[in-house]
Length: 412
Image (cartoon, rainbow, N blue to C red; front, top):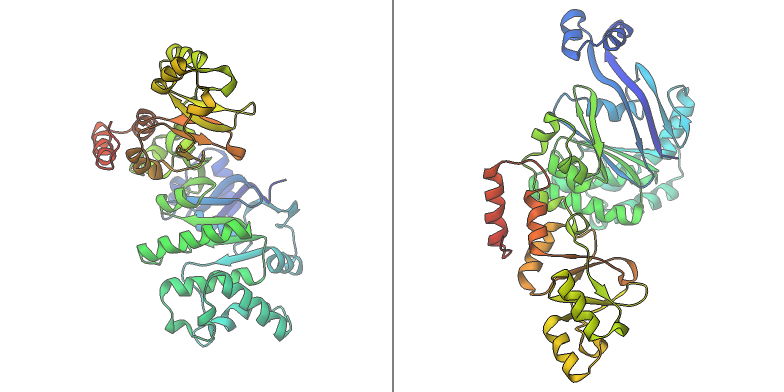
């Protein structure tokens, strides 16, 4: 079961919101409804699921409805219609007491503007949510210190917000959300107020924390590169509606319409596509087959090297056509002539990280999974093809990519 389930969720601001819902059902646009009735459609019949442990990014331009949507998910804003389930519990019909319990135990929120109390120290700010729950002093101080340690601010426990940088203040906001150990983190433009370098550091920290926390995170941003970097899946919004939901590479390589295509056209594909997106089938042989069979297989497939694997296709080494030819004349086995010090990458390695690596090596790069199982091989042409051939982009941008790739040592 998904951690969060949202079904046909809508929010209309103004009197007689049901009139706007009726007009939407008749095909009226958000703009037409506002001009004729003065009612503002913030979210329009949105449905999606968020899996446990997933970073689900909701992205869109200003006014797209993304911030309204995240506030509907914990009922800081009351929906006009639709349903929201958290762990299978429907929260729209909950009374104030029930909702307060869900917020205490399952939901944490991190805001764009930090929302810290200036008169409280770092530890006292982090304690605040526990304090209003009447958690005993010793227990809440211990939990606060644990959360502060998670975000690396142990030495600043007794400092005040005015003494902290923007990035440090945002860490305090994150620690406060984590102090309750919530299942779900709602992060509304959490890093948008930070300078670019600090923002990147916070993104790195969130990804590092997520490796150990395994929280379910609903992350709101207007920044495409932030969405691509953080999201396991991305939902793109426009005018209160969800236009497309998918993995980052799906959004980039298979945009749902012209709006999505234009939205993503200037994104850096090398920071989205990974090895498994561009790898080719790897020709391989077990060492017992012998040098003559290996050479014939190379000739049949038009390759100059061949991977050596065991019966479970775990990678053992690599042989070249030259070495195999010598082995035929000397009687050596594939096991004795194969090279074992060969480059390998995981299937999730970004193309951005592969480019300099491919410039430095002169043999194919193997893509391996668990227990060194051979999944595929990377060749320079396929990597470049992944950069310029997966989406419809301009000739000018293709040429720009060629220059960038060549300058990193990967010839077209």
